[in-house]
Image (cartoon, rainbow, N blue to C red; front, side):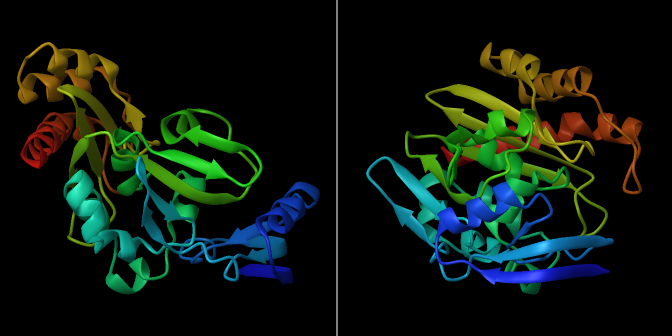
Length: 261
């Protein structure tokens, strides 16, 4: 059960950041798709719905996506698919159901750094930056490896520098969470590889990248990723099973990336 003592619909990002800074038990309300799970006591629930943070816009150098943008909008955006390929669509279209994707927000997904997330490895492969209200801009890849920032996500930005990405995952059923997922980014012939739902957070696979960037096959690359990464057990699969399927998942993601170019 979730208990909320006070509800505030803020009128500015500064107001939201100020509440977060002063109240350690305050919490940002996004789509609340996962916030209600488990037992949680929230002193102040912060609603950003008045701040017009649901948008997908193009600038000369980036595509910007507001923090309150539902995942469904990303899934159906022709601008995003035209610019980066189908990976972002494919990484969102399998998330539970349309009803959930219509309410779950990008900002909550990014700030939460959920290990089971399908979209985060793709965003990392596309060199995405997060823009916080007070802390400024930080790369998503860096944010995933550091201590969480207690600040309000305003938006993300994805550079338009010719990069594409491919995505692949394995799951028990179509709308279940992934047992393992992977994203491969390609820019100017160079590859980046990220593997998530291990079940730990998505991480980069630099040794596998070296294999692929040296001209070897996607099969060899997947084998290298399986060898270098750490996997764990949960209700969806064992560490051994994840290690066994990693080769095929990375291989498929790499082939998807090539097809997107």
